[in-house]
Amino acid sequence: MASTGARIAIDAMGGDYAPHEIVAGAIRAQAELGVEVLLVGDPEQIRSSISQHHGSSQIEIVAADGVVAMDEEPLVTLKRKPKASINVAMDLVKQGRADAVVCAGHSGAAMAAALLRLGRLPGIDRPAIGAVFPTIMAGKPVIIMDVGAIVDCRPKYLEQFAIMGSVYSKYVLGLEEPKVGLLNIGEEECKGNDLAIRTHQLLRKNSRINFIGNAEGRDVLSGQFDVIVCDGFVGNILLKFAEAVGEVMLQIIREELPQGIQGQLGTALLKPNLKRIKQRMDHAEHGGALLLGVAGICIISHGSSQAPSIFNAIRLAKEAIDHQVLERIKGNHFKKSKESVATNSSSEACDS
Image (cartoon, rainbow, N blue to C red; front, side, top):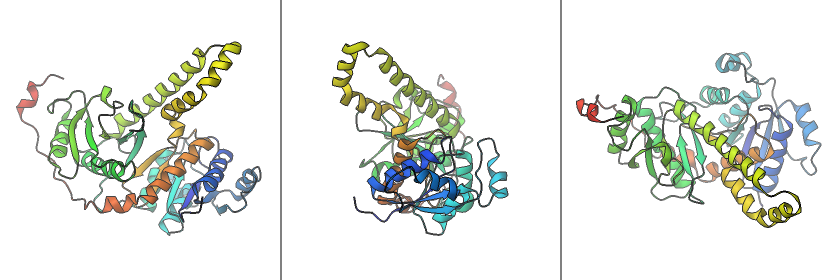
């Protein structure tokens, strides 16, 4: 595939399996996706990993000094280590040397570095991490906003998350009029806590989104919604629970396949089906989550990411670049929303 001209900076030192697995995923992405990758980190370690792969001499290495460890406090460490790999990777985007950044290390550090180095988009009060989930409808994913960036939200933040999620769903996932839902404990608009009730009022009045109402937990993977918004506290729990369920289901399938020759024959016949099941259920197939709302394309991958996850994270970054996600979000002309006044006593009539 010919190069698209997209240049993607990758923090090669972040994550449990860095740099070897990060490098392996980046090499595959450069070969198969037609992107240019810039591996950021310790040049000696990166070269050692690259040497284990054939035909990868064209990959550019950008030197960095240090990494933000998982047990370190993000803001303090980022300031103490200005040349850490995540800082250098973000600077490449800020300087225009890269079009996107992918990082698989400390997610809090990635978000903090993006805010410090890139800043927020105009009209965005807080960024959100958007994760794409599969649904029971094949080929119809749902994006959840937010899955961990902002744990304490105001209604206007969730309103902005809904707009950004709609933009991504429309231009990247190809849905003409994405259906937006608010994660809640009931369908009725008067259900939920104060945040949910006030957010429902804002979303219902916003003409820039196709808000169809509250989404209960059982609706998340139903395919009825294209975008679901929630605060980062709830969203992060939802994300990790869904990942665990996917892993459990894949393990059960492996364990329940027949053993012996009969099992081998059956598995061989089912191989295409099993591969499709894995693609739909395994979080590694989705690569990571987008940090939307900052002035640059940033993909945050799992700390446990291996080469397939990194490859898919780079694919996500390429899709965001190709579909001009930043420009589309800017084009929605964000306006500061006035939070609704407290609801009246009618909300008390609703059961929780």
